[in-house]
Amino acid sequence: MHDNNFLKENNAKHLWHPMAHPAEMRAHPPKVLIAAEGVTLTDADGHKTLDAVGGLWNVNLGYSCDPVKKAIADQLSALPYYSAFRGTSTGPAVELSYELAQWFKEDGLVRSFFTSGGSDSVETALRLARQYHKIRGERDRTKFISIKKGYHGTHFGGASVNGNANFRRNYEPLLPGCFQIPSPYLYRNPFNETDPARLAELCAAALEDEIAFQGADTVAAFIMEPVLGAGGVIPPNENFMPKVREICDRHGILLIADEVITAFGRTGAWTGSRLWGVKPDLSCTAKAITNGYFPFGAVLISEKVAEVFENDATAFGAIGHGYTYSAHPVGAAAALACLPEFKKADVAANAAARGEELLAGCLGLKKRYDLVGDVRGRGLMVALELVADRTTKQPVDKKLISLVFETAYAAGVMVRVSGNNIILSPPLVITADDVGKVVAAIEAGLAAA
Ligand code: PMP
Image 1 (cartoon, rainbow, N blue to C red):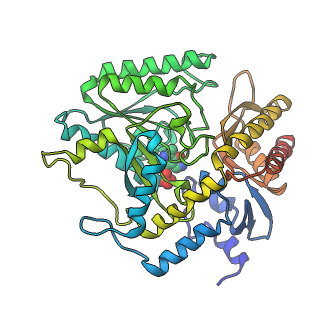
Image 2 (cartoon, rainbow, N blue to C red):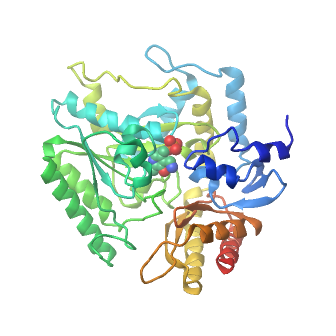
């Protein structure tokens, strides 16, 4: 084992980081983390920070969840791997599919298809959506519509429905037949609309318009995050998703909820769709399903979609899709151990309560610092959008936002910088005291900037 100095010096010399420029990572080495306990991280210098990022929106129970660690260790001893391809299955995979059917009953989701993460789940849902229509004889329904600012992972399918230019340009040409409507993003939208309910109407009308333009009988699915996450935490107006559901139903288009961040309590509801009273046709999950301790995901499938596949008499129903690690028994065991822990800690209720405190604290910062142009959030997903000028809304200089990050870090809180947003997605088990620490550390950063 090399020492911590070796880690710090060699990081980014041999390692390329996701979502980062290799040269920038060499010039400004990232923090190297070596340990974690509860909601606290320790870096290679021994400096401790409260993790207001929650890993990457996924470590909802914090870093010391022993039942999950034990389940992983036990499964590694009993059966570290076997596949779920045709002909074999494993105990944890079967049990997890049973438990998830109970967990998601209220959302009308009755079957699971397991994956290795969020991008895999999105890819799976897009494929199943196309296949659903092919089985039913509507073979022209191949197109996808999504939302600008939406994030759906980085596989070619997910990147093609993504709504952020920086995840697209370098990888084009992407999948043909993917179209984006304006985002229900109140702070910046092409309609200059300032009323959230009217903006929801305008975005829904844009969806209607796009469907008419493409031809409804060519559209397979609409995909959206119930609360947009990586695009800058954008909670749509409460009318938006129900309206989308109604439009999709009217045109025979499937609704895919990308709940990779929002499933399992982060928004204050057990699923983001439930927040808006919507039942999706397919739902993508990953991240918190194993508390981030093992790469794993699940696509949940509605009764309506399941019936078409299961009653298929055309031979189009065979699933020609899957991963070596689909239904990995260790991941399934981790997820099985997480579900009772989520309930025991009532993470959804805590996310709702702590989320309100965090949002109120950040709105207070907006009052005191002109640098904060906008504050948005729902449950324990909150963003502060930093601007150089409140009138022009010009994004703040990169150096200033880095200063906010470094100051908060020195003050003992890890936050995440994404573009001109500071994104907060702490573990769902944080306390009111922790919320106070997060707000105080960001305030120190804003004061420095
Ligand atoms: N969908 C959403 C909504 C996400 O937030 C993410 C990851 N941030 C993904 C998909 C992709 O997940 P992964 O990084 O696990 O592939």
